[in-house]
Image (cartoon, rainbow, N blue to C red):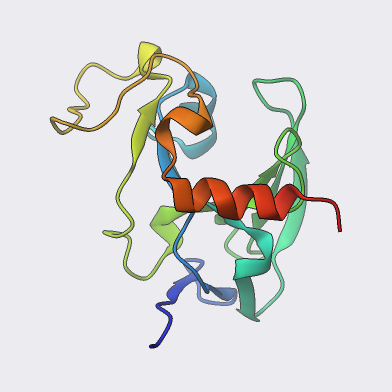
Amino acid sequence: MTQETYPGRCTCGNVRYEMTAAPLFVHCCHCTWCQRETGSAFALNAIIEASEVRVLEGEPERIRTDSNSGKGQDYFRCPDCRIALWSVYCGAGEKVLFVRVGTLEDAVKPEPDIHIFTESKLPWVIIPEGQPVVERYYNRSKYWPESSLVRFERLLAPA
């Protein structure tokens, strides 16, 4: 059985990467911070183990920024076109990446599993019927599939 990969890249193509596993979970964040950071209505993040993201070409540049939580985050951007490929949130730690779904070659998948911080969702954004929606952040154990919870616990277990 072949494992599916998810190739991605920056706009100029100088940094290419692939996710070597399906994401743990995908959230669509409508917070005002993500709106400002992306210059768009929301950020779409595929949460995945850092060990499952492999850089194929180039070297992303790590840039430290503030975050709404006050804990900060590190963006990994192409040093040439400056596109954000993924982030590390200090609250989640170095073992977890938040890959920007729009940088995947097939940005149609993965689809969002949940819409978060919808209290600040722009009114013209229509969320598909049946998708989980929360006003702020969510409880992982309530929304993540069991297989992702197992992977996440394994990831955080002491070595």
